[in-house]
Image (cartoon, rainbow, N blue to C red; front, side, top):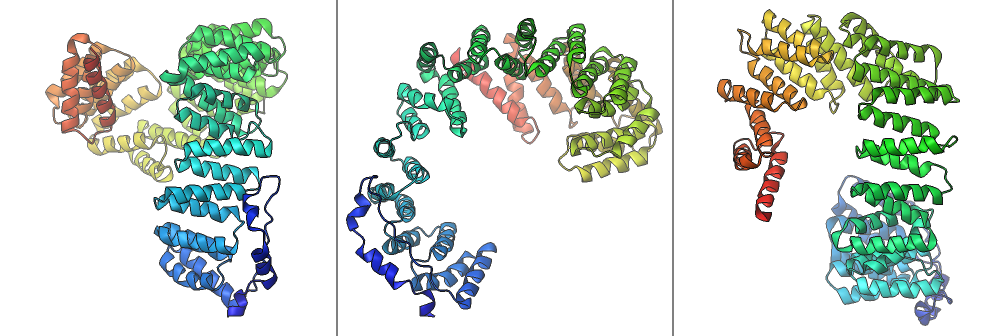
Length: 613
C-alpha cells in the first residue's frame, strides 16, 4: 500500500536542493517550481477516493474525513486528497486542522503560492493576524500571474489588511510594469479611507476598459456621486476630466447621475455634448430617452425625441427612437401625436418587422386608451394578414381576443383565447389566457367549470401573476354558494371589470353590496374602495371605509380600509397624528396583514419628520 503513494525520489531531491532564497527573489527572477511526479495509484486508492466523494455528496463529511486522513498521511503532497479534505474541514469548521493541512502541503511544495494563500486565510480566521499577513506576503512573492496577484491582494483586503494591501499593490505595479493594475481594488481601499480624489483617479482609466472592470468602475463612481460626503468633490473631478480630455465615458457617467438626481437640464445638456463626442450617431440621445422613460420623465423623453428627429435622418438607432418617443407621448396622453410617430415609423421602416410593430402599437392605443375596439381590431388584423414576422405579428395575434372581450362579445373572445392555447406561448402568457378563459366561463354561468379551471391554474402556475386573483375568485364562489341571484350579480361585476367600464363596475358592485344576501357585501365594499383608490377619489375612499367600519367592523377587509384612511390623513397636516394612531393600531392588531411592512415604514417616516420639525 505504501508504494502506491510514494512520490518520485528525483522530484523530492529536486525540491530539497532548490535555492531557498528563490521565494524572496524579485519578479524578474521567478522562483523555479519543481513539479512533483504523479504518484502511482492503485485500484484500492481509487476506490477509497470514490467512497470519500460519495460520502461528501451525501453530506457525511465526518465519514469522508475518516477515509481521507489516512490517505493524506501516507501521501501529504497529493493535491486531490488535499482539496477533498479541505472541503470537508471547511464544512465542519475544523480551522486548526485546516492550518495543519496547509502547512503539510507547504512542507512538500514550498513554492506553490496557493497553499500559502490558503494558510493565510485560515490564520486570519484563527485570529493570528501577524502570521496571516506573513503568509499573504509569502504568497505574493510566489505568485506568477495577474490572476494569482489579484487573489492575494483581494484576500488581504477581505482580511482587513488595507494599508498592507495598498503597499503590496504599489510594489506589484512596478514589478509587472503595469501602472493601472489593481485599479479597482485600490480605488475601493482608498474610498474606505475617504481619499475620494485618489479613488476617482484610479477608476477613471477603467471607464475606457473593454472588460467588466469598466462596468464596476462606473458603478463605484455613481455611488461616490450619490454619497453626500463625496458627491461635490467627485463631480468636480469628472468635470475637469471631461474638460481636459473630452472623456465620453466620464460624461456618460455624469449624465446618468444628473438624471437620477433630478438635475434634468444638466442631464439633457450633457447628453447632447456626449452625442457630439461619440460622433453624432444618436445613440446617446436614444439611451437618454430610454432612461427618462424608465424613470417616468416622459416630458424630457419627448423633448429629446423631438430633437433627435429634427437632426437625424439616418441612424442605426432610428427604429428604437421612434418606439421610445411614441411610447413617451402615449404615457403623456398625447395619443394623436403618438399615432403620428408610429405612422412615420411604418412609412419609413425598411423591414416588415418594424412596420408590423408600429401598427400593433397604434392598435394598442385604440384598445387601451381610446376605447375604440373595432379600430384596434382592424389594426391587429392588418398586422396578422400583411406582416408575418417579428414581435408585432405575435402580439397582434394575442391582442385580437381582447378586442372582443372589451366589446362584451364573450363567446368570440373565448374562441380566440382557445385558439391561442394551441400556440407555443411562454408561461406568463399561457397563465393569462387560462385565467381569462376561466373568468369568461363564470360570466357565462358555467360556475362549476370555471371553478375547476381556476383550481387547475393554481396547480399549473403556483408562482404565477394571476394566482391571487384565481384564489380570490374561488373564495368568492365559496361564499356565494348556490345563491343564483348573487352568482348572477357577481358575474356582472366580472363582465364590467373585464370590459374596463369603471362606472358600470361601481354600479354592479353597489348592487352586490346592497343585495338581500350579505354574503359578499363586505367584499363588494372593499372592491369599491379599490376603485376609488385607483381614481384618486378621496370622498369615495372615506365613504367606503366608513361603511366598512359601520357595517362590517369584524371583516377581514376592514383593516385595508383603515390603512386607506390613514394614508389620506398623513397627507393632511392637521390630521397627521390621527394617521399615526391608525398605523399603530394596525401594527398592534393586524401584524400579519400584507401591508404591515409598508405601514411600519410610513409610521417611521412620520416619526422622523416630527423629530426634524
